[in-house]
Image (cartoon, rainbow, N blue to C red; front, side, top):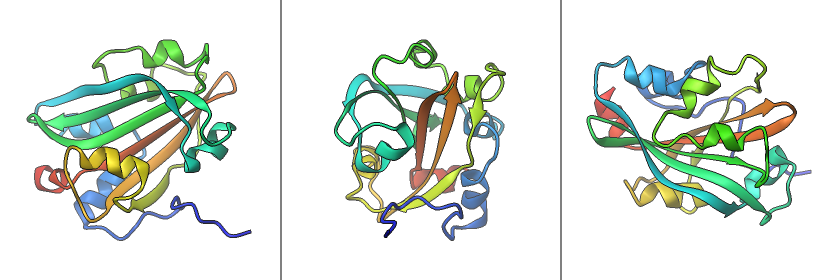
Length: 174
């Protein structure tokens, strides 16, 4: 079987400061806040969406199936630096209340507020501009490729898939 998914266990080759941020084992939000710049979360959209090809297996849903998605930008000093997509099954009683959070960072909950949460290892990719999530990130800032990380979290057996794409402005603000 050929693995055509862009997601790998090892991160892509990147400059040290960006690689350090990409491989941050704890909350990316807390990491960005610690840099001394004004951190904020801007909600782009939240609600119904569909399962993308490389999300199907981690979510145990068929490609194109309905799901619930939260799309946000993480900003430093009002500059977008990370585009994030969090997705769950559309009627998931475990995750929907967690995702209904307005502009509060999801990382704060995923790394400290849910002791019953299980987290799988980070996966990494360098996403081409034609990847669906890179296309969404490009609406903010275009790049030749987007360093990205993804993690699956399980809450009472239900998966949440969080994907974060690092925008080009991040390397200048680290």
